[in-house]
Image 1 (cartoon, rainbow, N blue to C red):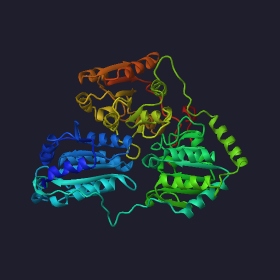
Image 2: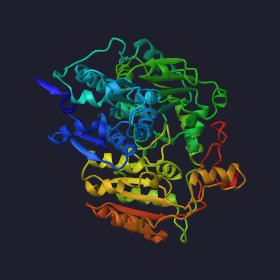
Image 3: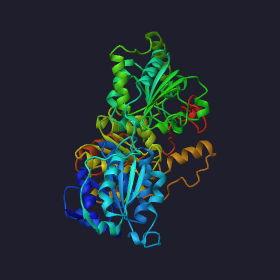
Image 4: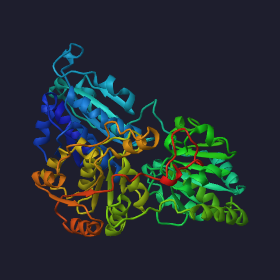
Length: 570
């Protein structure tokens, strides 16, 4: 049968069992929107800005392990989407972004709403395509979904000129497809895995360091099993939270710039480090020169060979899917082919870790007069039983959420880790709520970040998304202010948020419920009221302590063992 290009795109989405497309219409994609209108298997969600379309698809993908899909028009539609694409690229999130383009004959002619979308997005996609022939459309979309979801996941952009969506050809959607130049390694080398276990067997101060790759590979249960089998301490990155139960004794906390004292000290002084699905990011290990001063053997498991020895030299590289490699490690241990570290060495190491843990670096001085942000997050965890899906924006509130909300399950946490995108939280929460209707979804934000995509309150109203928004409102760009206080002599250059709206009334203007909370004694009650309103979006504007900073903290350029634990250390 012959179909138009627009019909082919919609049929491809149906074949891929896509539930939601997040998008915003425009001239070059009107044929596509016409075909979406004619069917009901793929539901379109109308956002109010293209950046939010990609963030919403991103949030959906993070909590479902499926490919998120966004649809934008040419020119400004595509450029507005770039921030969302770059956000997904940095965090390895599987997306297919379909962008409209001017007709093929007009490409390169400075036509109305023309930009070189393929050129602009090339540095921040896993791959991209410009489809100039309608006969290539189905195969290209099949490739896009394959590339986005396999190996190290990432966003793939498919740019489609308007005339291609109107042309006709026979439709055949390939059941399977192979790409000669794209064959991700799945199975880890058994010899390397055996070497890794031998290193762990001889270790006296071993540590498991895990990252977002464990979540992306759905390998949390396997990581937990290996960690418990060996009785090893473990610590995670911002992106890895939930890969190992956050309330368990063996979990030392988050690593890095705002990580726990015990996690960073264990990372710095371990003698064998097993890195699983992590990339030794600068915010995690600090200065590489400091990190490499301590002698240690490093085992690195990652699906992406380009990530191995990229920032630090490793001793045992294992390229493969995290889940498959962990399976092989567990099998070798259970079959008696290898054992973990000796009990005496581990006991001594655990005693050292408990001594570090005794510093209680996450303690803070609560107040009866002013709301402390840490207290809000702790109460959120209590009220939700630790079972909410949590999306955040970027800033101090993001770090407090990571520190004080204990994630026991994977795919409950969505935050922009690599790019640090303000405006991510609310649209990501929309995608999460659509993926899990009836489940509690919290968006933790600040008064600066929320205004980046606040227009999406309109989308939430249209689709009846009962998200609970917690704004930790300190009337500052908090993380900027913190750095200006500590490193720039208290010169708060453009970090004070003057002329803020009344967020509670603004939420009400969009048709939602707005609450402003100014007293610590009202925090828990407001949270309980909000989550009791199962069908309403509730905006909770917490007026928090303006002077509160995020601690612990590692200054840029310093090592993991050079931490500022509190304001008294400044």
